[in-house]
Length: 139
Image 1: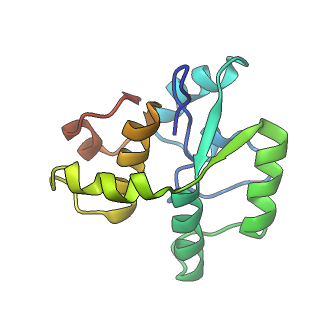
Image 2: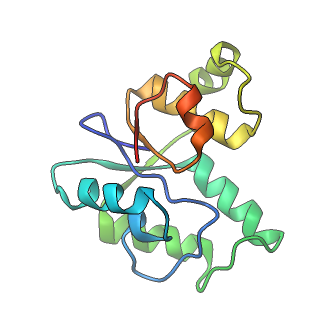
């Protein structure tokens, strides 16, 4: 998720991760160019939602996400190399789901949207469903 100053960049879970690659560059998607511009501005804070880490672990275990290195190592390396801040999942995020319309039923995406709203941070996604919600996006 984006930073309070502009917007953290969650690592897209469906993308093939590569070692020591900036988080916004982990896949080829339309959001990558804009995310890279945001990422390069050193004053911006970059967040990785724990919800995205959870989804990556699940997808890796069921064979939908191939990783070249263990997820724990990937996250630690990216956190250290790119000053990623891990955005925790809080109770107010869970309870915020009740106020989110049911346009999109993916539970992970819904949690990311609630986190974005609750923390007042921008969200990077190429998922067109996100535009149906009152969330700050860049793509």
